[in-house]
Amino acid sequence: MSQNFRLKSDELRQNNPTIDVRQDDEAFYRTYQSSGYIRNIALTMPNGKSFTIPYVLISKIEYDPLAGAVTLINGGEKIVLNGLRLKALYYDLFFQLPLEIFITEERYNPINNEAKFIVNEIIII
Image (cartoon, rainbow, N blue to C red; front, top):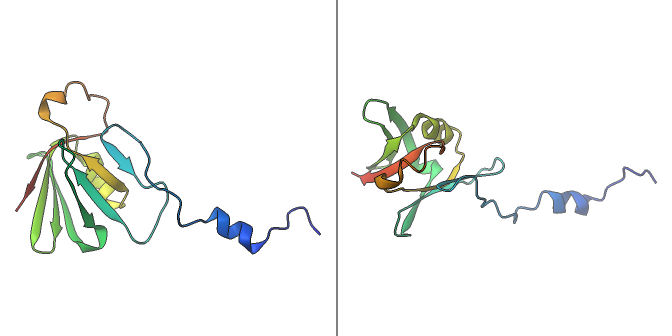
């Protein structure tokens, strides 16, 4: 038998779908580690309250540099994310990378200078 021989069960263990994809990338942002088919994005408020949007229901993503906003159109809803350096968030949403985005109060913006982007407010229209 070859030393490179592997059982099918070994491959199944390596591709385990129960792997926990949650991780800490940055203090206010988490992404998926690998690609997948069924994805959701969680938006978490400073008080801990959060809600989830399936990516499959997002029909349009807009970035407005003048307003400093990213808009997600989800069926009949518009979800506007306001903050700083949101072009990076727009591209991450394009590739369905965000797992969870934490909303940060504006008073903490100077402390979070090294963050990829900062989301300060969510408006649901």
